[in-house]
Length: 75
Image (tube, rainbow, N blue to C red; front, side, top):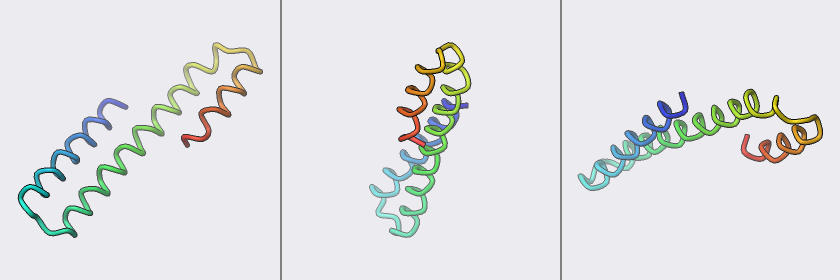
């Protein structure tokens, strides 16, 4: 799921670069940049949630709390 989201972001970013090269309207470029940003935010969220779900279980309580605190800045 994370790779799918990152590939989507990559595709949107490629589209932005092409749009800039082809001097497309700024409104269209901004819209496409918003799609890039959204795809990256969603990928990051998915990565953090996946890490919490699969990696924190293996830690003792203190380590898990520390790890979660460290991760929370990315949410």
